[in-house]
Image 1: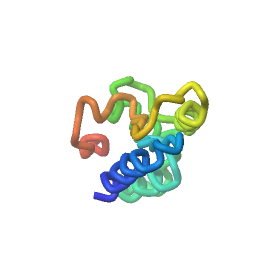
Image 2 (image 1 turned 135 degrees about the vertical axis):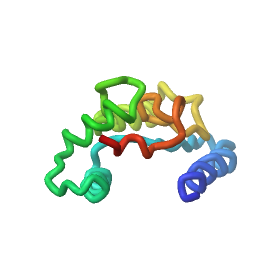
Image 3 (image 1 turned 120 degrees about the vertical axis):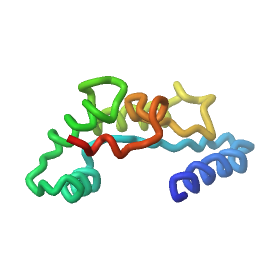
Image 4 (image 1 turned 45 degrees about the vertical axis):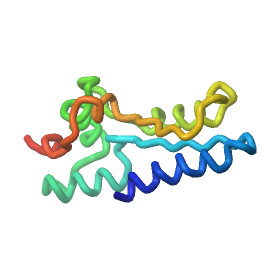
Length: 115
C-alpha cells in the first residue's frame, strides 16, 4: 500500500504543480543490491555472509527478464539524470520502473529466493 501511496502522491502532485511548469515523477527500482535488500536476502536465505554481488547475481538469474543482469546503482542514477534533464521535459506524473522487465512478466517475487 505504501508504494501505491507514493505513486498516487506523484500523480496528484503532478496534476497540482503542472500549471506552474513543475514536473513530478518517481522511480521504482527492483533488485538493486542496496544495504536494505542485501540485509533482507541474508535473513531470508539464512546466509549472513551474503555479499551484494551475490545478491545481484541472484536477481539477475531469477528476478529479471534480462537473464544474468541484475540492477545496479548506476542504472537508477542514469534514470534520475534523465528525469531531471530537459530531455524528459514532457514527462510528468510518471513512475519509471527500473526492474529489468520483472514486473512486466511476473507479479510474484517469492521464486527469487528459492535455490
